Length: 188
Image (cartoon, rainbow, N blue to C red; front, side, top):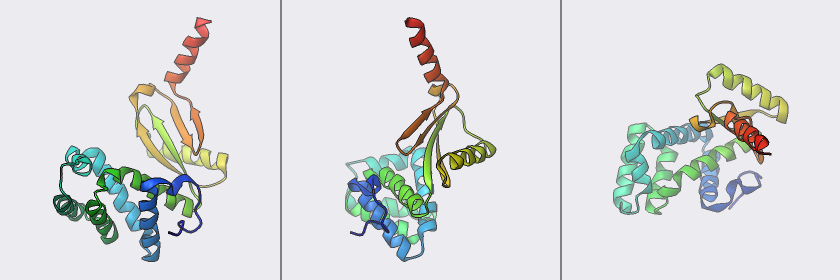
């Protein structure tokens, strides 16, 4: 299998990466990279919002044909692009729907690498506004010299501040970490 236009590294390692790489190759050949990416983003949001959808993709007791029928209905209801719909059917037939979330993340990483972008995983205690995201993207672009796409997660347990993972680099500016460091310093 071609390694997605010369994109190297661990993006395409593992099962999820191989499926995502194959989907990317098909999307590139069909000029459908953006439509597949949008469909996968919508699907990821659906997995996060719908316990029923999450149960469908992760349930080992749902048979292949039932899973294929159900995922085809989901794809129609969500108005996913044809290539993503076919991809989901292949996953159902191969009993690989449980790996879908990893495949979605790998596809986004492949697209970002293809475009010369870097993806930063940002965790905040509260949702960031569009203005904050724009400022953060500009700051990170200055730091790395390339466009930065931001994938956000909200985790109230960090109390405040941000945790930014940019490749292998972790920038932890969370209040939780600062308080833990302060507590360690007070101990001795």
